Image (cartoon, rainbow, N blue to C red; front, side):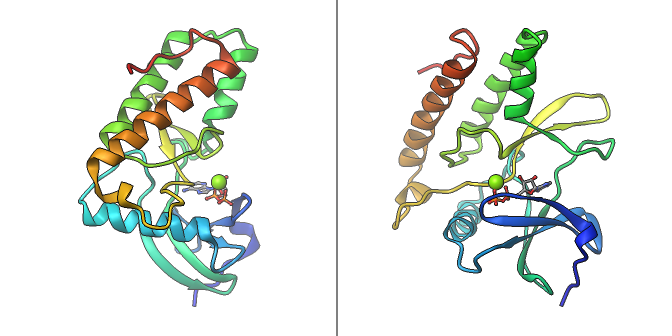
Length: 197
Ligand SMILES: Nc1ncnc2c1ncn2[C@@H]1O[C@H](COP(=O)(O)OP(=O)(O)O)[C@@H](O)[C@H]1O
Ligand SMILES: [Mg+2]
């Protein structure tokens, strides 16, 4: 059993608490408050379906399986942080800061969002998340940004045909991206992004 000290604490949400892996600082261990947490089970079965379909992803964190810890049953994931070791900003905080500063990097922001949306489709990522707290901005050595998804993927439906039938996957993602764009425009202004419909 792995012992996790409180000093390794990274963050928490409504469902899980995340710690740095005690033996590897490039990994995190997530421990659900409820061992039967429905959202986590959804994510795990979604990831299983992606493996079955041989879908690879640069957006999603890598998943390395379950681990027993002294704080309960944990799950090991890739840790997302910037190349300089600092914590990543969420996409929501980034956009709020851009708005507050009068959009100094508007073109960069639009290109980032458009690239992200295209990648969600290309990688067939299923999510309903539009609150942007689970999307992190990861910076490399050159300061270039890419978006990573750390949480809340999959679908809550009982029999997720949408995981396996690509036609349905694509339809779901198209609707999601339109919703995401609409929410972004409502919050940040009409001319922010454009997904082709
Ligand atoms: N892969 C990760 N890399 C770095 N920090 C993470 C990672 N996953 C989660 N965290 C941190 O832990 C918090 C809670 O994790 P999350 O998976 O979002 O749980 P919840 O389901 O409770 O929202 C996140 O908001 C983030 O601060
Ligand atoms: Mg979360």
